[in-house]
Image (cartoon, rainbow over all chains, first blue to last red; front, side, top):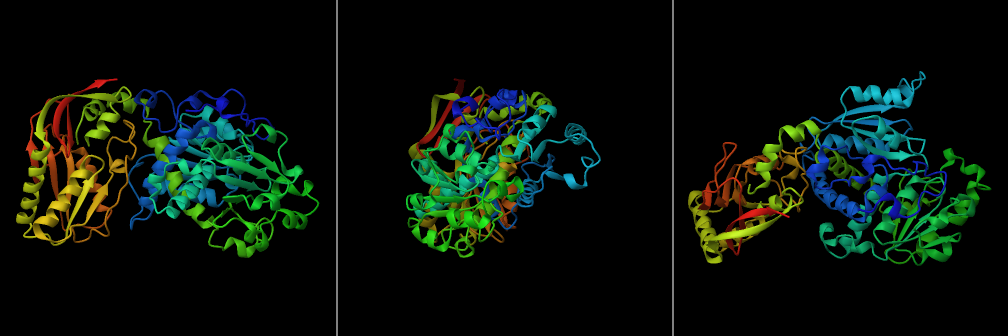
Length: 378
Length: 189
């Protein structure tokens, strides 16, 4: 597994503020088949850097199995029966929250839903007290979204439960990057008339991906750059200077550009980011119209894309700003597939975190049974 | 599912050391032919029969079985694969991850499913498979074919068709493939 430090200097600017000292749990790989680690500590998914290329590949592989589950008449498996998952969304979200809740329910886990607007956080309770109160009810996983970078990492230190980062400030949104990678691999495998599981991650080697838009404020961009670079893709980030992070030079990207038209024709994937008005984009741009004219994927720009180049967007889309209405509906636009795959990929991540690391007591008490298991046969 | 069990044997997988060759490749082939005939005889033909191999050890056997059934009766027999990882009862006790693809042909409502696995041991994989199959529709009947029944059942499950009954010790390992059946041990790496 690639550690955070080897991964590359992605933590150079203020947006990546989880601290230099990774929590203890960081060095346990997600889904790594190791009984020794099962009882030793909880597994978390806080950053793509926790996974490394091998971890990402493993998530994609397990996601294949859950895509199959999602296609069934009864898209539900009993894998996480008796586990409790809390969706702790301190920052508002619709799709990510619904996606995680659907994923948890399809794994037969019990889901507790939390939203900040109707909670005691409004009454002045601290995040820590809120989290510890919920944890006291017996929770196996926290899915955390917060407007502050590093909040999920902090939660992971306070509770004895797995923590999944569902987006923290400008820092990271790892499951979004995983589902984007899954979608790219799925489409490329289909073009080769292969099953996704046969494709492996070879298809990412040298893949030219352009990430366009508000890179500075985008956790999606940070996670995607880390994931795609780890898998061997050549990432180009395209944005006006004001929307690039100060430390972009230290990112593992092949190219930084201010001119979308000059890179369009070379891209295999054109990944558009939402212009995030709520994070103060207005101060960084003369006007939204000017941004749309220079960086929006208009019909004319879509025609200039290489044949077969994919158009992706993490949603929600600002139609007419970063993406033209008619472009969103093109055959090469895989935006709805991203959403569909999101459920399967989040099922994979939840299963790998909760299904493979049992509580220490269970591991100890039933060690004899598992030993019998492992010595052979059905 | 000899392959899987071996790969995850603590610590960090183990090395399979063969001791005795129990069945040769020809013996395995003959056993499959016999089982095919037993299936046809018991079910008065092959109508509604679907063969499903358990990942990963049962899959090559299931493929071969469906070929032989076709040769015997002249009708095509659908062949699928099933990975039971999400239905196991040891999730959270030891690392469980799906090993390979699940591909169940169509709706199983009304089908006569023949589950195929390489080794019948504790019976827990088969229990998981029965639960999994229920999610694909209500099969008319489910029958179980295994190449080796090695004993040591922990739940009341028995096979309908057995290639070879083979008494074993708990700590032994049975390796089954189309190349034969080998009894051996797993030595920690």
